Image 1 (cartoon, rainbow, N blue to C red):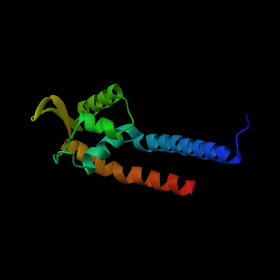
Image 2: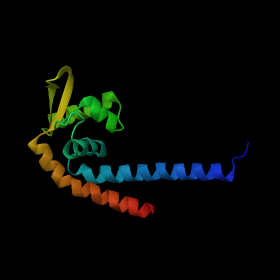
Image 3: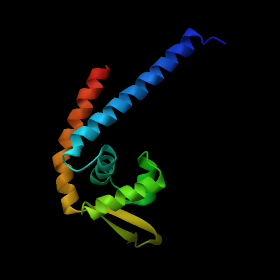
Length: 132
């Protein structure tokens, strides 16, 4: 069964998006490596630095982070553990729900985020401009 021109166009567009994502992810990893981070680390720091949790508090529950980043629960848990070991985030029990864990940036994490944010944004600007 031959694909129609419209179907083939959709497939080519999809593959182009996947290729752009893969190239951008590699460039982000390369640019952030010198700062001891990878793209996934930065995504979590970016979320913690830029956002306010659904309950209006600073910091996010691990489940809220999981809903916003494209990592499995176990991969996210390991990532947060590494960030905590490096002194970039703190984890604490949620006072309103002792089953939940809240993650917040430390002063060190906020400082590093401030250094690497322009690096990450420059990579995005370059890669996405090339896509157009």
